[in-house]
Image (cartoon, rainbow, N blue to C red; front, side):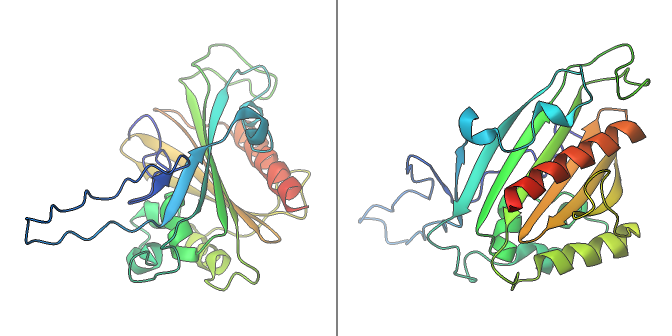
Length: 246
């Protein structure tokens, strides 16, 4: 496994544009060339969020107290071709399989947005340095750099593409996950799964509150976040999701 969980470490969309409007599609074919090249679809537009807008999203608070960490937030909005199913299709539904964890446990935010026609996606990638010695939350805090990803989606009214039902079914089918609530957040639905891969173990979660859905992953090379650390992260993610829904 790479330094980041591969499928969540990239929130770039194929054929998207930046916030400044830079066109990332294929170059125009010269008039003298008889072969036409079709422009890549613009399924989404992404931009980095400034700190004053990223404050509503999880960051250093995802890590145990006194364990320094930081995050970088990105926003994705639908592009001009987002409603065109022939160009921006439901790839996650079409390729779903329990063995491919990128289709349900840790989906790419751009692919998730295309598949379920999400109104807005915000994603955070966070990391803390390697530490030695206990923290307030966990006496077993020794270990390498801890990393997390958080992707928050604003669903269309009524969730017509069935994003929540799709993930509920996938977490149940692929991980036997039952619904629960994070500590202190009884109104937020939480389902978790353990994803195994060559780099070790990643803990994944889906959280639902009203018209908002969040996907979270916790990982560290050769190390698993402790039970207390995981419970802390789920609660922090739920708190942010509930606050965004109000």
